[in-house]
Each structure stands twice: as structure tokens, then as C-alpha cells.
Image (cartoon, rainbow, N blue to C red; front, side):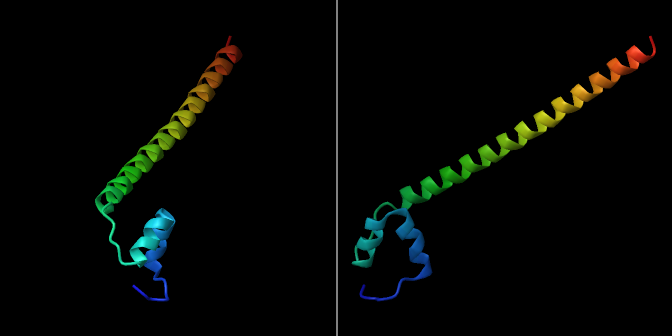
Amino acid sequence: MNDPYIRASELKDFAFCHRAWFLERQGLQTTLTEVRALGSTDHALRATTVRRAQTLHRTSGLLLKGVGIALALLLLAWLLHR
């Protein structure tokens, strides 16, 4: 391939592996397309898991703060009515 221009879609390949991008520009096809797709799927699943964990962490923190405030108000009410 003697195309002097780089297509936008090639930037992803270059970012993944400079050498693979160069070899593909020379006309060689990679045999790792399926492996790369599996890796991308795995990363997407891991990102989803991390986002869920972050959401659960934030939710549990808010819940814990709410329980703490409720207990403090109950204690205050008990002390005032004693």
C-alpha cells in the first residue's frame, strides 16, 4: 500500500501497536484481529465492572452517612426529652 495519507481509522491501529500498523501499511495482514477483538471485549466488561463498583461504593457511603445522621438525631432527641 503506497497511500501517502493515513486514514482516521488507522490511528486506532497505530495507537494499539506501531509495528503492526507499519506492517499492515506494507501489505501484510495481521492474524491477531480476533485476539484484539477479545481483548477489547474484555476491557469493556472490566470497565463496566469498575463503574458498578464505584457506584456501589458511593451509594454505600451515602447510606452510611444517612444512618449516622439518623442515629445522631435520635440520640439528640433522646437527650432532649430525658
